[in-house]
Length: 136
Image (cartoon, rainbow, N blue to C red):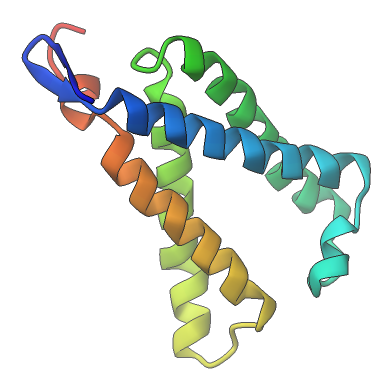
């Protein structure tokens, strides 16, 4: 289902789906904040608490923005833009170089697959023309 806003097509159902997906990820972030070391149950190394906390806090903050996005999908689409941006940066700065060097830990493959689903979903959902239209 698409709507027209100033002549720009918006995939509202995709936006809502990505908000729900982001809320689920935020729940994982909350769980890791409350119970540090949770990911070690899935083969991840024990996290350095400060930087892991930054990452989990970001994930939780995105989820809070996504909750608001369920009510106003277009207004909160910058939440998904932030998510898309940092995940693409992670791929370019971390995942790809470690893969090329043959130093990518096996547990990071799952993270890469998960992040890829967010990147593809965000690219479909984010109304770029709406976000960057003049006169907003």
